[in-house]
Structures are given as C-alpha cells and as structure tokens.
Length: 294
Image (cartoon, rainbow, N blue to C red; front, side):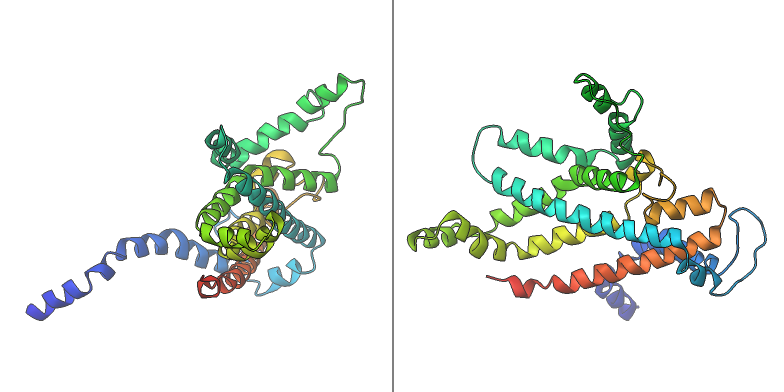
C-alpha cells in the first residue's frame, strides 16, 4: 500500500496528462488513422461499402493536373503570404515600438483583423471586389472607368487572396516582433551610438540578428497557416475560375463533397499533412534557442 501511494505521488503530474491524451486520441489520432485507412479505398463518402484499391489514389494524385495546380497555389499562398507578413509585420513593429500618441490604438487597429473569422474576412472582401455592385467597382465608376471582374482571372485571384490573407494576419507577426524588440537590451544601442553607428547599421547589425528567434517563430506560424489556407479562398472564389485558385485544402473539400471521392480526397489530405509536417520539422530544427543567446 505504501509503495502504491509513493508511486501515485511520484507520478501524479504524469497522471494529470491522461485527460488531455484521451481527448487527443479520440478527436485527433483516431480520425487521422481513419483517414489513412479511407485513403486506400474507393469510398464515395456515404455508402456502407467500399473497396480497397491499394496505392491507386496516391498514384493518380501525383498524375492529376488539378492537384499539381492546387499544390503550386498552396506553395504560393504559404510562402507569398509569409513573405508579406514578415515585411509588413516587422515594419509595423519597428514603427510601433517608438513612443508617440495613439500608439496603442494603432496596435489595436492592425491586430484587429486577426480576431475576425477567415470566412467572414473572405465575404467582406468579396463584397468589395464583386463585379456587380462591388464597392471597388462603384468607386472606380465615379471616375468614369469600366467595372473590372477582379476575381475572373486565376492569377489575379491568387494574388488578391495572398494580399487579403496577409492583411488579416500581419498582426500576429507584428506582436511577435514587438516582443522580440522589447527584449533587446538598450545597452546595445547605447554602445553603438558611442561608436558612431547610424540607425541603418544598428538595424542590420543589432536588431535583425537578435530578432532571429522571433523571425523563426513568426515564419513558422505564418507559413503553416498559409499552407493550409481555406476560409478566404472558399468565400472569395471557391477555387475558381475553374481550378485556378484552389489550394490543396479547398480541393480536398471539393473532391469530397462535390465529386464524392472520399478516398481520393483522404489521400490528398494525407499528402498535405505530411508536407506541412516536414516543413514544420525543418522550421523547428532551425529554431534552436542556443544559437541566439546573448
């Protein structure tokens, strides 16, 4: 009995993990394993029976032109949005790290879109960009210009989605960079002032090197979010025109619910999961705090 009580006291902290592990197993691990199983079948998503087809879904997936287009768009959404969010997020952080009137209000305004659901942001911008009675076309109509179907061209739709996604989530990068800037000792800048270093030299030789942990964190979060982008695309273009603006996430949705190819869409989901997992592991390996100590 004493040994049992000692065991309980020693491992009480580990036992507290059990509820979380059970929830993870039920709502994450089990659905994932079920999805892996479905990816080897020809299930249509609603019938009671299905056949195992081995690797057929995966071989077709790598030969599918629409999948290649969606995967390329996914890379563009992920890396394009991440690049814009880093540039503007860092610029906002450097600006808002200064003391001036309305600084807190400016921070709130920049961060506010993050709190809006992605699908709501998508529909808000859709009403701005739609061809008939869109706010932007109404505005340019005041100057005698013909209305533009902003979302009719695939390449332009992709660029607009990148811009909207970046605008919505740039606040996350701003907050991360602000935290990084406020952790840099002021003594570094004071010493460089004594040595005669200008603001530009201070930025490139002090600020940027000491912001590396914040950069890696921000890039990782934004990149993963961009690679699984779904809401804004669904609301703005639904993957159109044709398949031109689909990401892998929206193509999985369309394949499952419109084409009723649950097995094929599950294979896409597994490939997307593995790709994001590899990207995440690479980024986490880069994020070694010991490299950035000062």
